[in-house]
Amino acid sequence: MITHIVCFKLKDGSAESVARTAQVLRDMEGKIEELKSIEVGIDVLHSDRSYDIALITKFDSMEALNAYQVHPVHKKVIEHMAQVREASVAVDFES
Image 1: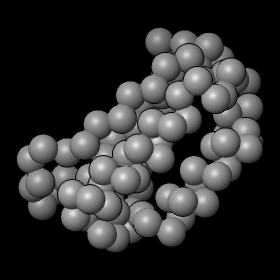
Image 2: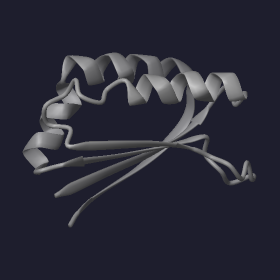
Image 3: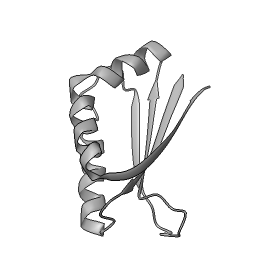
Image 4: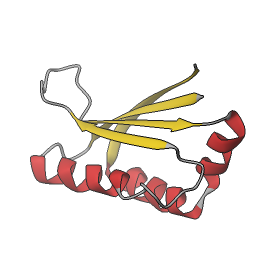
């Protein structure tokens, strides 16, 4: 199992902007066969080191993760994120 975690800091950190972008991420659920699970969390602490949104996705293999990366639904999400994000960090691990 591969877990793919991405944290996003948005240019506009307003509650409305964060909620809208979190929904864009959630909307991938059920649309990408390789995506076995998805969880989207919105930061509640709002500290100086906080990011606005965490995306946690799971895949059966690296091949599945690679297929997700180029899937048309994910590509649309990437386009959205390129417009709204200030920064992002990621970690991928096998379990």
